[in-house]
Amino acid sequence: MAVKLKSLAGVQSQTVSLTTDLKLRIEEDILSGKLRQGEKLVEQAICDEYEVSRTPVREALSQLGAEGLVESIPNRGCFVVGISDSEMQDIFTLRKIYEVQATRWAIERITDEEMEELEENFEFMEFYTMKEDVDKMLNINASFHKMIYRASHNRMLEQMLSSYQLYVKYAPKYIDDDSAYLDELLKEHRAIYQAFLDKDPEAGAKAMAIHMDKSLSRHR
Amino acid sequence: MAVKLKSLAGVQSQTVSLTTDLKLRIEEDILSGKLRQGEKLVEQAICDEYEVSRTPVREALSQLGAEGLVESIPNRGCFVVGISDSEMQDIFTLRKIYEVQATRWAIERITDEEMEELEENFEFMEFYTMKEDVDKMLNINASFHKMIYRASHNRMLEQMLSSYQLYVKYAPKYIDDDSAYLDELLKEHRAIYQAFLDKDPEAGAKAMAIHMDKSLSRHR
DNA sequence: AATGATGACTTTGTATACAATTATACAATC
DNA sequence: GATTGTATAATTGTATACAAAGTCATCATT
Image (cartoon, rainbow over all chains, first blue to last red; front, side):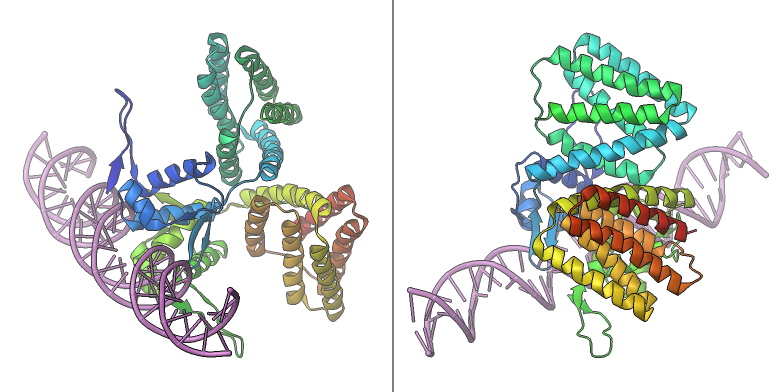
């Protein structure tokens, strides 16, 4: 009824529904480019590949359809909806706009508890910058943003920005100097974090806008 | 396998999948407030109500979950996610931001064909303002916006703005004078349409921002 | 009375069977 | 040779059966 994900050594294995698991896998296959634009997703083929029945496959595809990653044509099947370069460009613009608004609201609405988490996150970020651990930094960066989404106290915004993060995650990134990259990232985040300390929404919005612009420039 | 919707006199009946049909019905029940915040949606109960099997019910709920209208807790079921007044307030803000961006892009990217459709739509609007037909106007208004979404040539943006329209559709609106309302609406649209004629994205963005602010003020 | 174990019942998760639709191959017609 | 019609296979849509998890009332124990 549920599947145990391959667990990392010593790490407790997670149990999720087949549907959820499948959805994540297919999502990754689409965003990573393994599945091409327009490609048809035949249910039985997915069943065979992942050794599950059609029910969870259909539910996963159904959800992906609602999210727009896949287009479902009645009685004909599901087709991969790809993202062109120009659409990816647009996504960065759309993301920036909402990241800025989320920051504004987050600074106005953040709770003490959330503020503590943000502080902790920022300290981790300083630590991993020193350690020059890029992978860890990418994770911390992602959760920094997620905390802001959370602190904006708007489910819808949180959901949309989270899905943007997915897209951005798979967009190719060009970095020639890890150390310089980490320093830049830390500096940009510091400006945002400072706005939270100062409780200055507009300063935060501005700092986030800059962060987003720099982020875009690192992606091409 | 599919259901024939009740057809209006003389109008050709439409055939959609049970899943799609169910999804629309449940969506409406949630947004109209028939289903309350936190209420549990028991699959079998929905099956009984609409006389279908669990499969399409589960798929409809699955999609609504992906869209954020219901929350699905593993092995426990689906629960209605309501929208509080403050969230509704936020939705208007978020919508405004993207409507403005959509207008900007639409003016830059609109095709000749789309421009003709927009022109036609605007003429309809003038016509129904004269006729003082509020219902027709609301439909025309909705499709005016949809055309802009389309002309922005960004699927994602189009999809998000369409779902905002759904929310707004069910938000209570306060109008005391139909005629004055229609005149206002026409005037606001004229300003936007004029920006399309002038191919002036910033004027369009401004006009749309004003339209959104007025729209908000009519909702309270 | 409060707590916690037990078990029947309900509900969800998944697999599978069947029905309806669409895609494909191939023959008949022009 | 292109086009249309038709039979067959492949695929999607829906219903149902079974497995697993959760819910809840009951009752014994403290």
